[in-house]
Image (tube, rainbow, N blue to C red; front, side, top):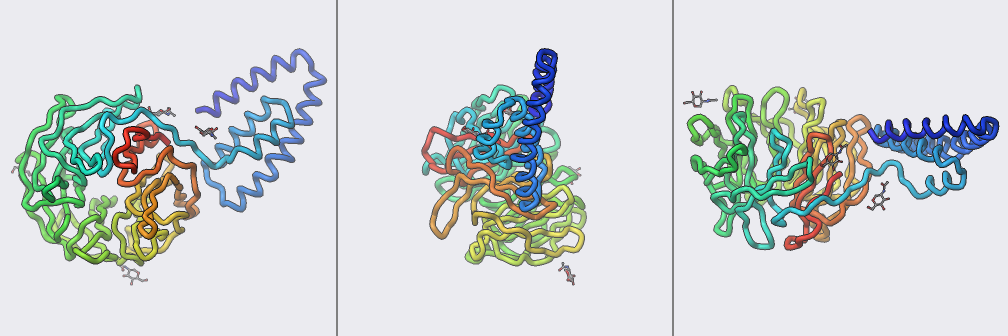
Length: 415
Ligand SMILES: *[C@@H]1O[C@H](CO)[C@@H](O)[C@H](O)[C@H]1NC(C)=O
Ligand SMILES: *[C@@H]1O[C@H](CO)[C@@H](O)[C@H](O)[C@H]1NC(C)=O
Ligand SMILES: *[C@@H]1O[C@H](CO)[C@@H](O)[C@H](O)[C@H]1NC(C)=O
Ligand SMILES: *[C@@H]1O[C@H](CO)[C@@H](O)[C@H](O)[C@H]1NC(C)=O
């Protein structure tokens, strides 16, 4: 969008200028074109070839080239080339949440607003919820939930309601669940789960049921929104918490990693909604927990980070063969980070912590599925972990939660 606007205004400027001093402009254009080729195109193409070009990089290069031509000044050109890294997209702060928090859940609703629920402010567990409106970049508090909770699950039901289940409060894991009806801005209690669950997963199946798994045992259950009841379904083979669940194109749910009480797991299981049963599938190369799992456009699943014994590792699940292959490594080992699949199919990961040194990060990086390479991107405004990233309908990513758990500042960034 920006590129088109730039090009239009440039050609307007150039044609007016041409009318006045035709000969001079041809000389200048000639010099500029020569300099552009010598200073930008040749070195850039060398760099881009080395780096294995990504679409983002090509687009930024185009923007830079058209901007520099409009300056018609060769000294500016070389100055800009040395200071601007064309592969970086910027992060910028947006308005702060009304209630700063981490370990919350962010969900993009049908109308494009982002619902933030629960979480922690220091050691205080929150029942508050709020909505981000991307059109105004503002936050509005909703009515509070019935329960305080963090590390809960949030599922968007087919009927427009938003189901919140389990999580933790100061007394441990919760079995309670409740739903939010955006049109009425009210929270209503619904059936209790059969187990108390936290650090569990929830997936909306195509038949409208919600499958929750683990947190912390091997049990799983289904929520039927017409009866508002939870029913146990078959157990997984392994108890799990801090695992991930991904919905595959064939409707099966892929459950990866997590902890089996003490041990980090590399075993992976599939739930088939039609038979309501679990089967084990290919085993990951590394055991992982607090990792991210992203379903790529081709239907395969990228897991990244979270493997205590190789924090930088990432691997790909082939949904046809059920096999895992090691893919490009992250530039920074991470756990408790966030990942989003961007509109162009690349995967953005940001923040997280390195448990060996207990650092947490501002850094972000992008995975390109066509090259299987992670490129570092720019830094977020603040260090974040236990945060959430959400893709807005226009493709911008909203990241919420400041790693400094009681900071009122810098609680939300846009990418
Ligand atoms: C990124 O943001 C920083 C600070 O907000 C600014 O100084 C810099 O020029 C921006 N870079 C680009 C490429 O937009
Ligand atoms: C997308 O929405 C965000 C949040 O409102 C806004 O900051 C950004 O400029 C928008 N991007 C585009 C390309 O319209
Ligand atoms: C939910 O429960 C209703 C009422 O018992 C039943 O008719 C419906 O088939 C159930 N939904 C699913 C997806 O099983
Ligand atoms: C993975 O690949 C091997 C052959 O390399 C094959 O024998 C196996 O069945 C595949 N699938 C799973 C789920 O391991």
